[in-house]
Length: 436
Image (tube, rainbow, N blue to C red; front, side):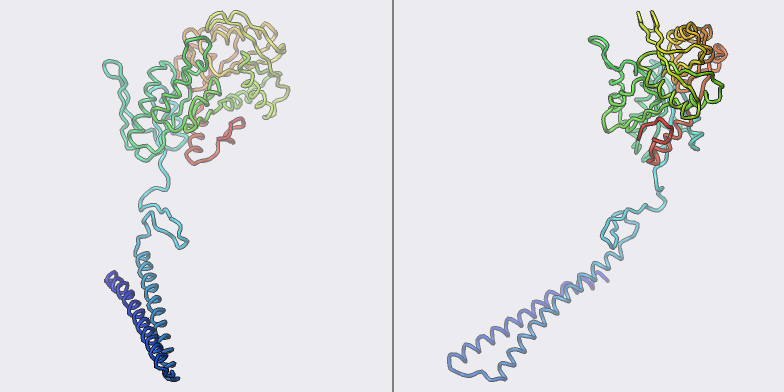
């Protein structure tokens, strides 16, 4: 009924204006005709005629003005009633300032949920991350077909959710990498809002440049694979080379977390004698320098730095080492990003002992511990080797190598996930973190 009445008003108003215009035109034409006749015959206009003519002109003008007012009032009332009748929950509802107001529908959450899934590479770490986040680990069925192909199914809805996939690409590298790629693709096809790959250990990172002709740059190729599958963000821990972040395009930001804060907290509990931070090669001096600064910032005095220059005959085999710096009468901490076969590490410990070091510790984020690594460490002059749980190890490893200590990075990763989800900076997550 309201629309009908408004329609009648809108329809009648133009007719009223047209009628008034016609009356004005008729009165003007009549007055003009009378003037022409009186001029032709020489008649004089009386005051009464002039008064009538002016009255007709004013009447026509008043009619036009009234018609315009009627049209304006009718349109204003019509749109006002339409606006008032529009539901406020409509996402395109416009406020009085004529600005679009986005209002959540009833029962809709104000932000998307965090959902964490784990591959088979390090489920224990993923469970610890979820424990610190106060959420549960998402349900995913992982297996292998008879021919060895990866079998994968996400067992819950992830439409519109913020998904985090925890999967280090540690040995077996190719199987774990394929799992990660298929998990990303599955989440993308299942309409996840954002997919973040949490890669505590980034496989193929050591192949970050061409050392000879006709060889791949595998670290860059892995980055392209992750991008192609549809990842939105990557969270890594202590990349072998920081420049790997540049292998990803600008649409995929990479957060390279540094686990040194975990090692710093551990060594601050130990009574160290004139500590010296040792880099096992020239490429690790920057990492050793940061570790030194971390100890100094926490009140440890007289922290020195040294470096070993190694010459290799073949991969994983060191021919000779030269020491740059003084280590006599000091506790040494060898800082590196990973321990693979431990050949370099054990040789470095012997070299430091030869130069008068009191005790030799080692801290590395990633403990690959391939082949004879554990036996070498146990037989070496190393006092203790500290690694993180970026790569999963069985309890038997500690029994086989009592010198091995494992620290957890679950708190570090959980805090990073929370900050990313809440759109907070990672800069103050730990002292040496870059802006993000």
